Amino acid sequence: MKSSKAQKEAQAFARGVGRALRRAAKVARKTARMHNTPIYIWKDGKVVAKKP
Image 1 (cartoon, rainbow, N blue to C red):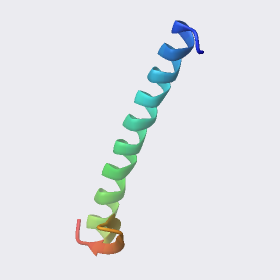
Image 2: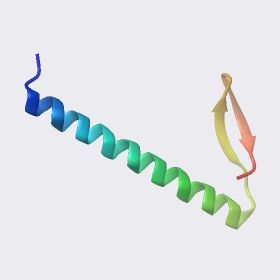
Image 3: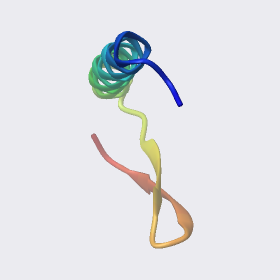
Image 4: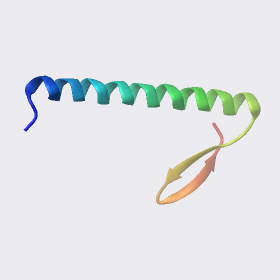
């Protein structure tokens, strides 16, 4: 079983990863708009092209 400190560190790391992924997605959407290209997402078990 993990110690309380290790659990807190793991949770903080997971929050940081989540923030980084959201920030990267925002930049990807902005770049796609600038170049008029679609964003590819996973939706209902399929890869779908979506206009940003």
